[in-house]
Image 1 (tube, rainbow, N blue to C red):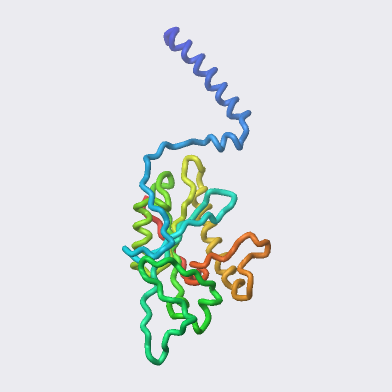
Image 2 (cartoon, rainbow, N blue to C red):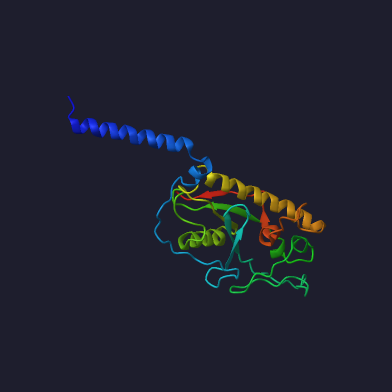
Length: 234
């Protein structure tokens, strides 16, 4: 036979459990989802974006918020164009874009200018777009972290590719599959940039409702047909 103390504890536990179940049943679903959980994360060293071609590795970077309805952001890395070799038979024209050098800012140009036959070869080249998801088990980390920034810069330089680091939402504040949904949104955004780049050749560079403008780095240099995914081990 259980003791009196055990019986009293069992009764109180049943009353408490019933109260909790009733509270969850009557709670607002949106409020319950918002209060799903929070996590205390250690402070992470971050690296600021640098739109100028770095003198150290020759890679430029910038941050973009691509979804106005959420905090979804990306950091884009663009490697320095290779040096141009001037030949006597094809001298460089004054109208051609100047070759980028380490430490120099990106002199943005639109796709219709890059596709011109008079544009420099480095302006017409198309680079694969590597979509990168940072590590951290979908709980920690960020696209602007110092370690992730250095990794993406190395990939952009060695692979000669544009790297798009996804700043996806983290758990437990954002429930599964929030991070995967953000990844899909980024892929759709890259595909939309290809359409906007084609529209800009005709004129405009803005979608039907004027909500999105062309992103010059991807429009001028990116090749959406070559978009591999890169995910760090979690």
